[in-house]
Length: 254
Image (cartoon, one colour):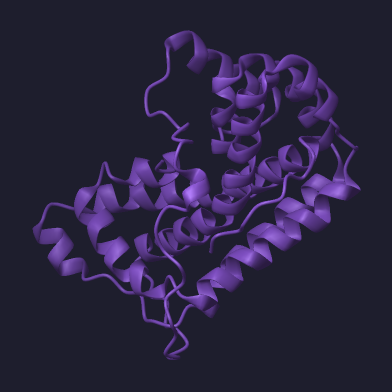
């Protein structure tokens, strides 16, 4: 799947192509280590929130095939959301006409490609039925989230589980531990850009000739900044659900 936040930037194809070209060389061991740091912060924060246990519900309400797919989905989101935040945070900086200097270190690339255990997941559909989209937006509003996060959208495949999980998630979001963790993840995401080895800078004269006006750039910068601010909640939600379904073991492909 393609994360909805990253997909939204494709509305500006010239910026998207240039930003990804600047990002791709930085998908290295340091990128993986920065993502793991975000993952660890979330894992340490979740136990300080109200305990959630959905294992018995899953065993009694979902057939084994659906249960396995849901658990792999939650684990995949736990793996992916920190990496997406680093990318979005970097693009928000670039869209402000700023550069990310890089450490100058030469590094081996991180492992790339779709892990075998994710092959059949494909759950983040671009278009959902209107009634499902409306339900997700209502759930996000009740959870005081500015947009529907990936970790909530993924549950659309199991509406009964979404209904089961929502009140438990709401209790977690209202805690100080949640608020503190959101702040810590935001700071760590900004700090993670200093771990990347290669310079990231865009050629604004070229992008302007290709039609990226100053007004579009400012709107895109605001959009990316909003996405980056919202994503720590997505990371926490993914880890909260991962713990709720029994902390399933599996590889963390960075």
